[in-house]
Image (cartoon, rainbow, N blue to C red):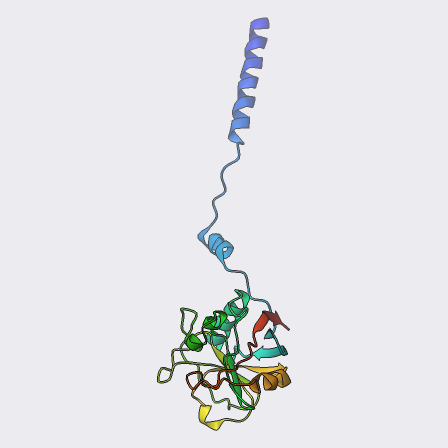
Amino acid sequence: MRQILLRTVCCLSLVSILGCDSKAPTSRVESPEKKAETAKEPAKPAGQPYAILETGKGAIVIRLLPELAPKTVENFENLVKSGFYYNTKFHRVMPGAMIQGGDPNTKDNDPYNDGQGNSNSFIPAEFSKRKFERGVVAMARHEGDPNSASCQFFIVLKRTSHWDNQYTIFGEVIEGLDVAEKISNAKLSKDPRLRSWPIENIRIKMAKIEYR
């Protein structure tokens, strides 16, 4: 009788051990769709993008217009967020008409290379029917090459019809046009090689993007 009872206990123990093994956890395999969802880039913040430029003369606030020039706005946002524009100078001004900045070459002490720099990437032209009126912000480019805009930009201070449909408009100044006016009236160099080059180093001290 004791032998039968012992065999029964052994059998029950064996069943219990095998039962535990059968419930061992298995590795979870994610579906390709789930992996793709995980790998997605974070969504961009909602709202209209604005660029805030703190200059030596005050702040300029630009409403960016992705509906008008999506690739140009994306490029400008990325440059601002990377700190690209920090300490760049407004290197070309036309009194009461235009100010131009955004050239990385202006960070050095050589004024003769100002206006020649880029970000090592270029954006295809996104011309539109928007007129070049006071407050418009557009990309500078090489003469004769519509697809050569990179990082330099300019702010328009008066209606300039001959620029219409020649440069990519990507924003409009909503605050700080008076600051842009002050910059445009900076004293200019008398060196004929430095056309429209202001003697005063008016720089971008801070740039950031906000969504409203």
